[in-house]
Length: 395
Ligand SMILES: [Zn+2]
Image 1 (cartoon, rainbow, N blue to C red):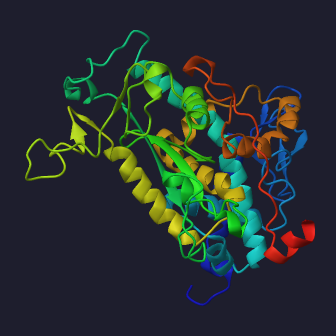
Image 2 (image 1 turned 45 degrees about the vertical axis):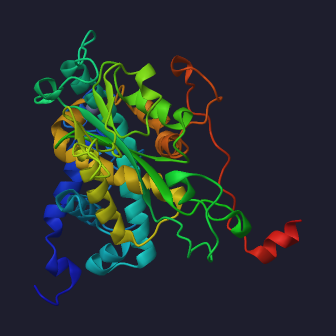
């Protein structure tokens, strides 16, 4: 009804059912008798009942919706909208307007969904690995470099990898100072030294397949020791990976890695660049360019987010893309280790941890050979935002 109250305008019963369904699939409650507790109790919205021994269990405990203070259908609405809208996103201010709740409340609801996405992404990694291992079994080799790869890649999920910057620090944001400190894309996420030198933009490492899954990580720079562990942890060794010229070190780990030279020069003196600068022998990078475009367009909706929160936003976007590709069924099947109450309790601590893992990338020792690329070690935390006056006070 146009102009009615929220509960008149939105089918709350439907969204409550959506919420209950998502929760019972992704966070099933196991009873002591071994049965899955999934019978709703209409008079007790925060409990579920065991169908065999009738014991009551908490519905929201040990899930991202623990201690939810707003009606549960609002969470169902937010999840379903994000799913259907993808690649577009629903912002906290839009949730606040649509559900007629305070902006802070809407932002907290948004954060709960981002935590759900960050945690559930861990279930998607094995699905991706499984898909790639089937398509590129152990001895698989692409034709040697310089040969046409099209017949080999036409029906295989080739992984395309690339990097992009969100909310870059322009010269104007640097108050006219030039950007000297880093090179390339990295220089555009850090402010000038004179202005504190802290990170203001977000550098994303994007991997994906054509009309398939996507993996996005927020990284501090593009060195082999940062990006290497991310690729190594997610993709099996025989995967075919197509990238641009920025990954010169990757061939040592992945024999089926191919690069496309975007600045290949033309042999003809009349032209600067070669005709095949975008695709050489069937090696191209169009899938990640497409992903970059749609990610960039989606993130425009949030005019800005701080790099501390970048992993949450990127995980959310990647989760809904992967959910549309793999489907809720497969995600629920591939549940985390054991869904007994003890395991579920011990998992609560890892909500934030998983976000931290990928936000901070890796920064292993320099000069390491490809095989000895170390697990990510935490980078120093970003410092608090200090004004020049406060900085002086610290000296
Ligand atoms: Zn029971």
